[in-house]
Length: 344
Ligand code: 1HN
Image (cartoon, rainbow, N blue to C red; front, side, top):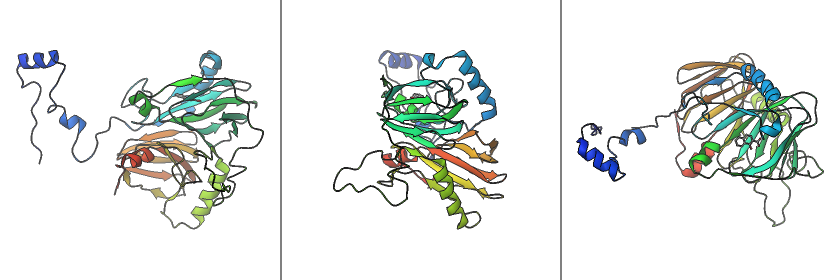
């Protein structure tokens, strides 16, 4: 049943003025804006961001703005649906590209939103997360859960660039976003947990009745992910999805509370047609090249590029050869709120 709801214009001028004076407004002209029929009507517009275009701009930022004057030297990816300067790529996901030059230090801070980084280029940088020193190698996914101290350093020789993904829009919406600044951290003198406690799938340290850490694994080395995807691909039929979720190894839950991460391998000549999901997504090409259509719009991408998909998007990915994508999404948040769904 779909009746035509009354408009604001059809109401008498004196009544509209009286409402203004009382700081109220009628729901019915706005009803379908906030509750569209059947599925949401996203503001987010899909787009692709070319690494080749952004890289020189980042390097120039390296000359124009010392890291001390930036705290974090980042170019933010703006959702075209929200326009220039939008601090988000989808409804809930912020993405930026960050540059750190040799010898630079990005000061320690902690904040309420959670972050994750995917290393795009360069060697020798590291990030220290609550004392855990995480080497940053290309393709690695490194978590900075909300409330954990983090600073970045660089002992290498060339520029290092990584992609930051945060649940920042959500925290801004909730008026819950803030940071505290602190001193650079002294790292614990040992490799990160991916090299120590969680080297083998299925094995976790014995706790003997003790508590399990909330964020046991902060760094997911790309080497491990690629090996795992290739093993999966060896035994997956043509057209079957080859996809792995990044999870908390102690619980199997998503590795961050609001954001989910999945690594996907596309094989030559294969087209992936995922279901339409209520979650929004951001795809980052770790390796290879291809094309994706999002709601009928075609986007070409290659290594280093990033593209977005609004909620309930119809998506198809085709790789030119072999390709690897990491998908960042907000299904964990939607699952916690009880409304995540997939449609054919
Ligand atoms: C942040 O803390 C980092 O720590 C990067 O590298 C990007 C964007 C918004 C808010 C905090 C970082 C950020 C950020």
